[in-house]
Image (tube, rainbow, N blue to C red; front, top):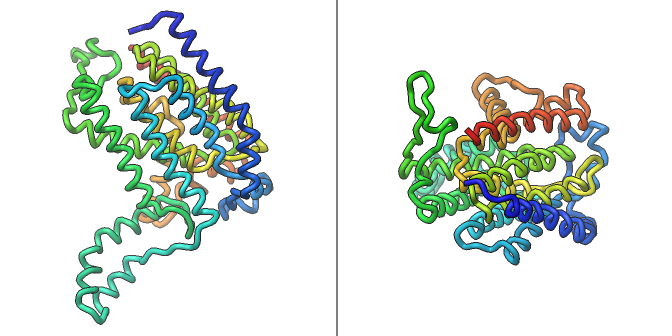
Amino acid sequence: MLQGTGDLARIIGFTFVGAIIAFLWAPLLTGLLFKFRLVKEPKTELATLGSHAYKRNTPIMGGLLVIITVAVITYFLNWNRNYTFVPIGVMLISALLGAIDDLLSIYGSERHSRKIGHVMRLIRVHSEWKMRLWYLATLPWTAFKRISVWFGSQTKRGVFVHEKLILQFIAGSLTAWWIYTKLGPAWHYIYLPFQDQTIFGWVISPINAGWLIVPIIIFVVMFTANAVNIADGMDGLAGGMLLITFSALTLMSWINGFSELAILNATTLGAIAAYTYFNIKPARFMMGDVGSLGLGALLAVNAMAIGEITTLFFFGFMFYVEAMSVVIQVASRYTLGRRVFRMAPLHHHFELKGWSEEKTVMRFWVVHFIFVVFGFWLALQ
């Protein structure tokens, strides 16, 4: 239900609150990041590019600017156990996972996991039958860990991919529990664009997913969090696209009558604007997993909480394209033995083709904007 303009003015006001507070304490965060040398080496394939040379001294975990700002403002000015409690909780869980990964990737020691072939040999030759039985019983778990490595960065430090997936599953499960049990039976339906209209003789009706909405929600939260994380690879790229997405989510939340979530999205929008200001090339700091995982999860939760699960694909369009480029690359590499892209995710493919970082970022912004506007139009149908 469309709300009054006074309510919209209040919502927009929180965009300014989020931006101002984030700008005010950004110098403090910057000083702390440089003080503790929270710097991570660029990917090996990109280290030789001159455009990435300065990034060796650019700290990560700049996403804390958004995460902390949004959490604090929401707690003091927009706290509601029915609507903002779980989204903030999911965001903080995902951000904590990202923070642990960021810190371990810098300060942690090298970690190794056994390959499947090694475990198979141990099953055959280990001197103790109890250990052979143990390796056999845990073989599916070993296979899961090794397969998950295909979709992660080639690093020996930080949180392993399978560990990320487990914690993200917990965050997704919390979201699914909240939506399924607390928001009511109306959220068990998947609402389609052009609702109650007849197209080619077929009346568009909502789909009652029932309990199946639970695994759908878990998957969407996990995939979206990782999609935003994957897209965070160039100065200003993820921040600019998140600005576009949360602008649409803010308006859509207001139109659908969820003022608390609209305020949360508006606050996030303001904080992201401040972050992006400092992240434009040459970046003062980078988002890091703490920001990308936290904001990706928040994006998914807030879109589904306002009933926009079907248009979420368009609201997060370029994030999902980036994620799918990694899936396609991995699938092609391990089935056909060759790469589809010069490098995944997609933004690095264009960079290695000769596009400048600025050109790639801005073109991705434009394409993302077009599809977000299209998704917004669909949501209004």
